[in-house]
Image (cartoon, rainbow over all chains, first blue to last red; front, side, top):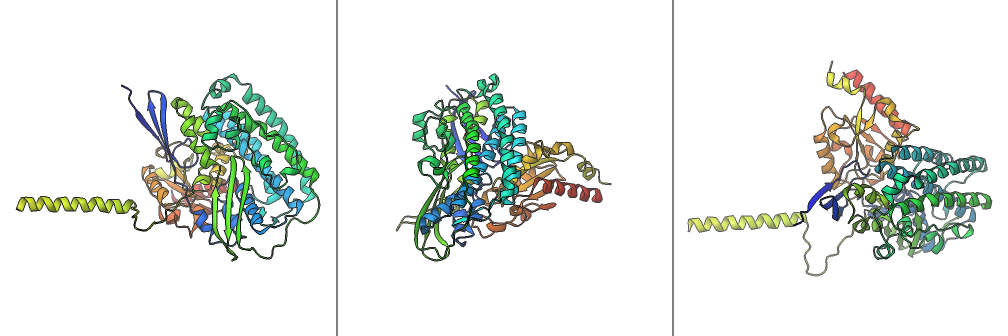
Length: 399
Length: 141
């Protein structure tokens, strides 16, 4: 008879930076089931957003996640522009594209480094993060901060990219190409990395569709989706680039998609810098009318969705956020099962999980006479039952 | 001279406790270990278990779930344990102070030795904070 053992990982563990709790059910070395418990990062951002002015919300949604700190504000401003029908100046669209793509470069390099760390290649970690630093320097130069750029604004961007900064930006991109070439060679031709990543954590095309995964996770499984192409926002319809799709669905394919996307990002930024027109970078907005709008953005991890509802006042009355990791993390249930414990670390990290993006909460509305019990109510019920039993026993003895 | 405190000034091993942050402070902490800043040259090592740690790096605003975990982590750490609150969230909760899921700031859960503000603080700021902490201990020891 098989013997099932539960291996608890977390919530504070060296595997990932954020607190989350995995329960691995194993038989011998084989993982047969997995539970993912989240909720350690919930901060109530949707509710906070309903108490902020429309112009303050980008700063708040920026702090949903430090790695996608352009994707969330960009999705929000897209939703607001959809709601109010705002025409955004063309220069602002190009600047948004440049910032979003720079963010994708730093995010993919960050993942590459962490993935290298998880499989024991600390050199890959150190080198990937070393080449990530110039990208952060570029951010500091053009936006004023290494992370949390605060560039997005309803109707445009907050800062212009001045002409004096452009040669430096181009130089950094040129220097990044040899580094990416090096990674491509070092990671893709290394026999040990191939043996470690090929055929591990497979999510095939049908499973990818069934579990609704998005972004590089879906593209590595042969699902050809990319919001940048399918529903263009910012200036993505004005530049040419390729969507990288791989068929295998294993971790090697996910790595390959992310490395090859780096070249596309660099290409997009170069085209934007050349095509960027002169002129205004901010539209003049008088007021936000009542209505609702949606914004979709291809974050480094996949589709990021924001829904905003306005009633004509200066605050959103509903702000719904759906982050890409929310669906990608759930697909671990398929990818992890069947593998060994030693592969679980890299499989759990392969979707590039971002738990702070994920943690939203659903509030149940009380319907008529149905009663909803929370933890305290259940404890109270249990204590009452014990008290009743005690009472009964005492009566029985005395009687 | 307090030998326990004196020994902390040489090589601090740190454990990283993320209490519902936005990840940025955590990434800047990891960034410290990579070639540009390379904190290991100053003797600081990130360890996998709080039982090996001399200092706790706390980031973010504790919510109801992580508040209890943070208390447990601090109880498990060998004493004296230094606590560094990294980032504006850990220092003063900034925009999350009105949130329904943010019961208290970090310094009401565990005693904080050094506050490093910034959103996120630059790696240089974190190094400066640690250097000031070491100077503070040397004075006390």
